[in-house]
Amino acid sequence: MAKRFLTGCVAAIALVMAMPSMAMTVQDDDYVDIPGMGVSPAPPEGTPFVLPEGLTIEEPIRGYNTYDPEDCDFKYADQAVGKGEQVRLCVVFNNATNSPITLQLPPGLAFVSRNLEKQNGIIAQRISIEVPARTRYFQPLFTYCVNSGRDSASFGDEYDVGNVTNLPAFQALFQLIEDKVITDTNFVVVMSAMKTISNGEALDADQLAQLEAL
Image (cartoon, rainbow, N blue to C red; front, side):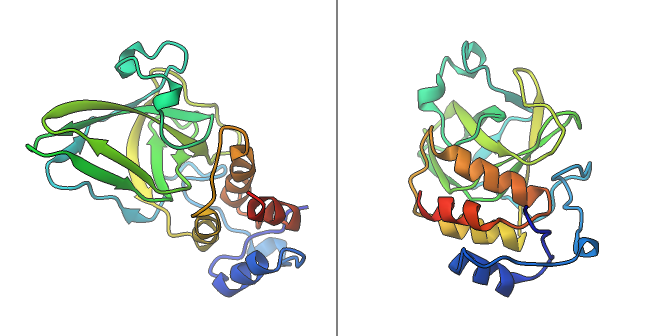
């Protein structure tokens, strides 16, 4: 059974990550809702994300149609960046400069649904996107869901760029998988970990072992 996550226990999280056989035990009354995650209707908190000068994102960002991506410049899933299957988006960038811009999306960046019945999404590894000069550039982006009980994103759903989460448990996870190769098969290990943390719980020994083995 997953244990409850204690806010601010950075040292304890690091210890669990380093020693997967150990369990972290806290009391139920230590549990806290995480804004924008789990069952929380609040927007995700964290550090605001700032785009490079000359680059903008069209909002609302819309859900991505995997099977017929006409509205994403006919870019299919093999041209997508990121992993995850429940919050798949088509992000449209506008580069107003005369040079290509290489954009870095940091792990923990949230994409926030305008509909509280639909999942928010978060990326778990750094994503690099090169946006050509003077171009309206379409990019399929796959993210991990972080809301219990909400529906998956679908074509036409509306999203906005959110904050970059500072939650210690997420930061520990991102550090652990920073250099891992996440594929269309093993991403479910990361998806499970993201769901556990977003529900305010700590990763158990089995999850940590699976992440280490990626």
